[in-house]
Length: 274
Image 1 (cartoon, rainbow, N blue to C red):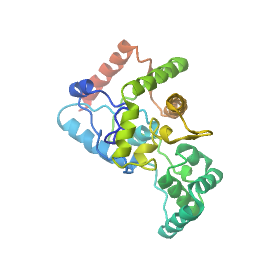
Image 2: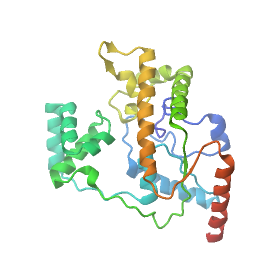
Image 3: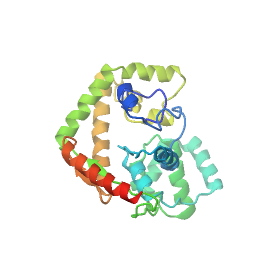
Image 4: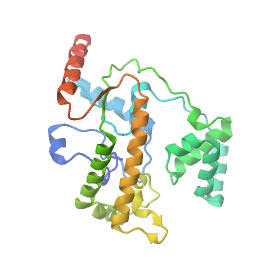
C-alpha cells in the first residue's frame, strides 16, 4: 500500500524525519486507482537494488507483505496461462452475476487463492477464475521456487514479538492513526475522485470505512475496531507465511545486540565476496 500517493497514515509510511536520514524507495509511485502486484514489485525492486549497489550501499528490503518478499528472494512462480476469450466471458459474467457470485465460485474451486485476496478485488478474482477455467488447475497450485535467486546473497532477518505484545502494539498504532488524521486522509482521497473499488482503497486501514454493518455505516469507534481486528488477522497470516521462508534468522526487535552481530558477520562475508 505504501506505493500509493496520498495514502500515508493508513499505510503507516515512515515519518519525514526517518526518511530524511535513510533513503526510502518505491514510495508514492502510483495513484490509488492503479493495480500493483508482486511482479511489478520484483521488477521495480531489482532496478532499485542495482542503483543502490552502484552507489556502494547495501539495500534493505523491508516487508510486512511476506508474499512480495518471498517472490523477490526466490523468484516469481510460473505464471499460469490464461485465455482472452475466457477473460472476456468472465467480464460479462461480472456485469451479469455480480462480484460476490464470482467470489463464491472461486471459494468453491480454489479456496486457497480465495483466502489470499479480498472479496472485492475484481481483478484478481477474475484472473484466478480465468486460470481455473483455462487450465483446470487452481491458481494457487502455481509452482513456487524454494531456491534463492542465484544473483542474490541475502541475509534474511525476521522480527518476532509475543503475540499479545504484537496485538497491543497494533491497537496502539490504529489509535495513533486516527489521532494523526486518518479520517481526514480518507476524505481527501474521496474528494480527489478515488472510490472504494480502487486497488489502493482496498487495503486495511481504508476499506473498513466503506464496510456496511448490520445497522448501516459503522461509527468511528466501530471502524477503528474493525481495522484493529483485520490488522491482527493479517499479522497472524503474515507470521505463518514468513515462517515458511527458509533460512530466516529470528530476533525480538529489542535484541539490538543480536541483530547487529548478525548484520556485521554478514557484511564481512559480503565484502569478502564482492
